[in-house]
Image 1: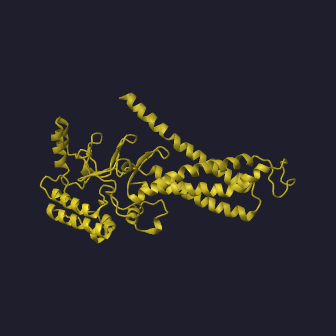
Image 2 (image 1 turned 180 degrees about the vertical axis):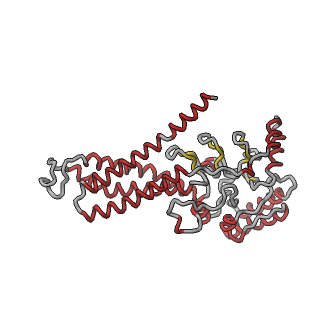
Image 3 (image 1 turned 120 degrees about the vertical axis):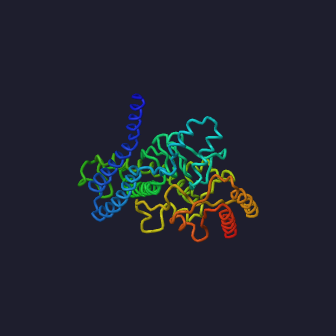
Length: 372
């Protein structure tokens, strides 16, 4: 027990190494840009003021979003998804898998879950001993189940999920702007440092040349580092923008969630606009601020199965509806939360009864297909 505890502590300490590295790079970039470039190198006071104002704007937003991404605790499933003490004892004593699934079905009959494993079994976490909500996964690094888990990011030493996905996107965006602004404003001085005046004094150098001072090292490396980080972050940010537009997590992009009709990669997609609002919220004034505004509770999500051929879709929906209305359905419907209803508008209201749910589900899907 003791060695395992020590190993766990060591892993937590090592996990902070990438964060410390990024922090040191950011601190050095602040010193190099503000002091070595703006204070000691740039001669125009107007240029200094403009550069410093924009630099500090990007710097503050970058640090703020990075801080929120790191220190926002991953959201975990609520207690309603945990097995009761009696069910837990029955589950642990039972060795036959089919009977274990029967115990889980009974425990999940009132839970708002609509996804299953690839074998149509209820998603259960043996480690946390709870039924996984839709889009929830267990993180081995954090050793907890994380709501709408996207991935575990070593650069923030935290899980990126429902509680901080907006902060992570803003962190990437402001990182790009921060690096782009530094690289763009440093470029002319980067070029001029290649034609350095041999003199150490500004008075004896021509107006279009720079003296050979210690600022040379900082300015040259500032451009290389900012350009390198910009290129590397650009691809990651573009990928996550695509994920937001499709309403997928990184895990779902590699392994599509499985619904009653089988795996469906676009099962949670509501359209680009509504997908964006699900992450950033309704109020535009908060979109660019690292303040939590994501819609929903992280445990339940509205779903839409968007397939290719409308005629095949209607047939599949009718077939699926007849299955949903059956008495053996292990996932009864439950009303969506208020925020999710705002996402769906007035075209979707889930009800509790099996037959009414099937009819309403069929009608909603047909409406979506006709409108699209």
